[in-house]
Length: 274
Image (tube, rainbow, N blue to C red; front, side, top):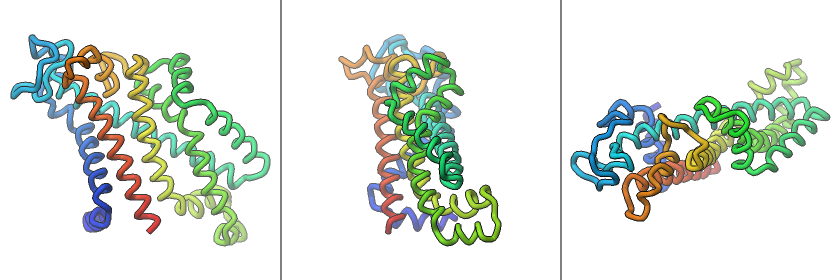
């Protein structure tokens, strides 16, 4: 497995390797960061606010004198893991519905597709704001809301793939053998959709990172005492005129995470096409 991964990385363009390194870095920070953070996330460690980087505080202090590096490590956990869970849930749900619609066809497919078209016509951020206003913004609800917001987009891609595959000869042979709809969906159709769906999941991950960060910047995302990267930008906005690292660091974290994911997705798609 390690040899195959190394060979795949070696075959990637430089941009893909950079993207992989950035995504891997933030995944490691999200998982291990809180365990290695130099200070407790809410501890006041500096008498000065918005102090510059120093040997004691590598990224300086925030608007309350808390260590920015420690809060960044904790914030990355909420941003990355919430977005990853929501993207996986959106793709799993959207693909399951798409497989059902493509195999059943007829009126069932038409009704589901029109319902999804209705949902996808609503701008994602407005849709998420309405759902947050209606149901709240706990961590579990935020993940469910973000997933629900992007199910229609995944459904359209998964259905297009499934409809093409359902008409192929190997699926017709499976039908002639008497295989049921579940067997055809999960054993015949889904395995041939995996690579495009993984690329789509990467895109959903990027969209959800930006969505959750936007909600948190508006004060509707992750709530205190928790904080994600978007919350860190919002709470330190008063440090913008002086270029405080407390606001620049989480903004750069969001940028490097999303750019890295995009570079990796592009490299994987290019490798799949070759």
